[in-house]
Length: 169
Image (cartoon, rainbow, N blue to C red; front, side, top):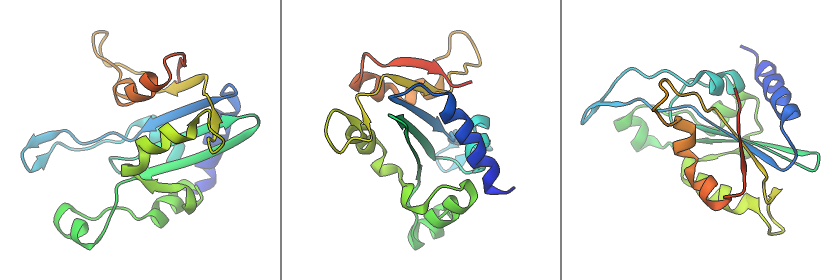
């Protein structure tokens, strides 16, 4: 599918987001079956709708502050050793080409938490000054389940307890 489709999807979502906000979307991960086997993996539908990517362990960050917007993608690091023993991973260039996100805005998952902590604050380098809104996919398969995105984003809520949660659905 053409990357402009995913760019339009993200633009429509960002347009609806409040000022001083961040949206986090997670591709998901394949659950362990045994020590070295996984159950079949299926990408989170909202993540796919916004990126066109169907690989596990990726995060999409959308930021909006004072008319400025930013789109960042976090992927698993890859190298020859990882590709040989754990299976081929997508490169930054491949992920950027599919999603239509500038390759300089594709980073590794190991940088994700630090990026959130430094990019959403009151310092001059922050992309969003003290975020007021957090958009997550809050789908729960059962009433007594915690939404996966909320569990994975708990550290953001802990960093900014005054942030208002919104269901991105």
